[in-house]
Length: 410
Length: 186
Image (cartoon, rainbow over all chains, first blue to last red; front, side, top):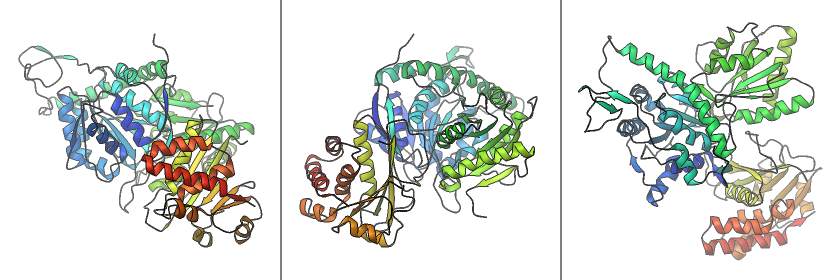
């Protein structure tokens, strides 16, 4: 039984919180491309390297594609690896994202969530990581700088769990979290080091028939990422899906173990319901918007409105059962997407939530709000209008326009 | 005393509005407060109007949006008074602090402000006198500390010493103290 450790309150931006967490997490290799749309994350970390504060091998690559290739290569030899990117940088990694998850390399990556061009824009929205939804990476989205710090530490434990062995991205809203200074309570170095531990490897059979840990090692040669023709490829993909399902329980376990040392947890690690138990109307959102939404829920509750919020912390793997049981008693749900799926029926989070609720005994009304693209700020007044809309939907017993745009000139 | 104070800083690119916002936030952390400090997110160009924001609270700050109705507005450059709506959204009991050698009453009149409280401080003059350079953000920080009583000078001193090289810190803290003293309320 661990107990809560003494912590230091620091003023850190989300970027700095990531760098500090990585510094404490005993990382062997960091590879990154340091130019825009890169953020302060790797700049700050490179200072730790230059000052001799960490023993990490820092590789400055010529592109994000190469940065992830370097992380993948290091990871399969057994090294703990980290990288960071955003926007066009993440888009350039696209090919390597699949190779990394397919090789079951538990790389940890921070994404300062930003828009994609054109028109040229690197401000906050979720277009970059949502476009990588099907790349086989676990995706967590943080609400504030504190959670960014905590999630990065947790990410190593989640990704490296032998029942998971999948790469993970931790999203922090571009600028709103990445460039904003906030209070962050940090754990002592040794507490983090002990929490993350060292990498563990499942034993596998090599082609020579030897039992060996699953990593590249000249003593026990094996092939990583081999060719797999139609007779095997499909089975590999099914195993990745199984690992994703395993991640659901590992994320919860890590969330509660972390709470024991830090006194902080984020719902059950997958979803964070807020005043949802008796809620009649509720919103679902990701990331920093949830904080503002909580203040709105509080104000509405004071007026007797049964409003609630569900923050989806883990988008991949999608916590299907948790979402359904948390939302099935609500009369109307507003799903917020900071991203567009052009030509589709609403945004990617809407697709999931509506899909999940299809199997509910009584289906709530579901409406989608696309908001905040390209860094557009959404005011509390605009966010509050979502709940007024939900009240009208409940009264009218129908959803007139399922896809809405919030704070848009039309 | 309010639970949370929201500050909006107006300056021009290069004048250090964000640094002022950041120093105030860091000083408040020394007093056990919760803080947020962020710039107006956009390309910063030297001389162009910019804004920065600070939130200081006795409780965890959950808001993650811009500040629409500030409690305090600090204007680093008086030429902005004519071009930027600096008092937009200011709360009824809000405070406006302007870098100006004029009396607060005169500035209040020029802002056509009926509500709120105006302070002035000759920040540029103080900066030129002590730093020998027209860098007025730390002077404005001193005036903000005086007008709001949100942080003690000792906390600002600690922050400035942590943030800057010893000689730079010493001069800037002298500026802060002087501005704290010279700031005038209507």
